[in-house]
Amino acid sequence: MDHDFWHQRWHDNLIGFHQTTVNPHLQNHWQRLGVEVDAGVLVPLCGKSRDMIWLAERYRVLGVELSPKAVEDFFREQGLQPEQRNEGPFAVCEAKGVTVFCGDFFALQPAHTAAIAAIYDRAALIALPEAMRPAYAAKLGELAPPGTSMLLVTMEYDQAQMEGPPFAVEPAEVQALFGAGWQIESLEHNSILEQEARFRERGLSRLAEHVYWLVRQSAKPAR
Image 1: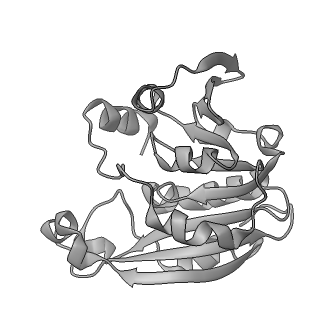
Image 2: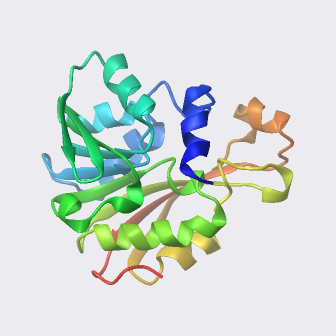
């Protein structure tokens, strides 16, 4: 999956992953992470998620998004006029406690994230095909200072029954991706197929959401 794939998805409005309300897992579990008010929170592959507005009521949010359209839509739909600047390879937009770096997530540097205390990933890991997920996990390990907490939401289903995205990420893969450098705790695991008609129509016989709390244990990148 290259950049053109995601640019085309946004251009064609094929964004079924976008949620029009704040994610309930974020609301239900975030306080367990113990993130101090006004701390920095990284939201990778953030799209135009309303979750950033919820987080920005309490924290300083740093979103990273490839699609300029997604970034433009986010600020427009929230009624915000962002300040804009360029920073290295990124076009940066900032308003109301939310800073969005528009560009390639893998170009982000530790200097950009030195002040973060948490990461929120509802739709980033599952947006990436299997071959790209180790590099993504390693990049998070590079960017996250020791002690950083992450709320991670994954989806589990038989990958043979449906092409992603979203892709299936089973618990064993989460352990393989993050086990070397992160403490991992399972917070919630629920079958959601009954509520998701669009996935039943795509042929799935099983669909679950899994919510994890991870804590970065060292500066050594995950492998």
